[in-house]
Length: 149
Image 1: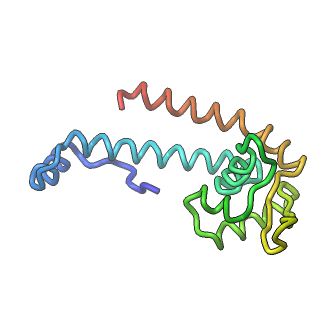
Image 2 (image 1 turned 180 degrees about the vertical axis):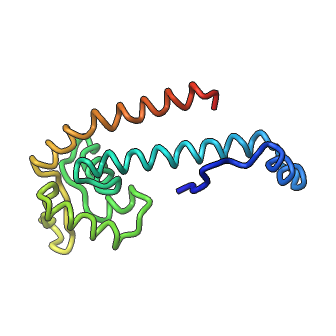
């Protein structure tokens, strides 16, 4: 998260940037982008919370769902596709299982390997959440572009 409510003034950015040989405009653009991204993440978390999800739960479900020729992924594959540590993924998948959105099965060839798949309730939850998710992102991107950022 980017926690600055007010971005530094141009004068402040120039003072730091120029003394270190960096283009102030690049720094201002980056700070503005980080602030907008942080606000978007907060809005998305609020949106997901209203649907009894978190961003991570949603992302796990999306990662499972986006495989065109498969209906499940191993826990390791899910971990590889997200920038989150394995134990956090495992705990979050357990919550999704407890909520009836994901099912866990064993690999026929290797009983130690667990596969996660979306349940019908999980597919329905994604179908319910994705339209608002996409609309929120589209609206926020259009608003950000309108600011000249």
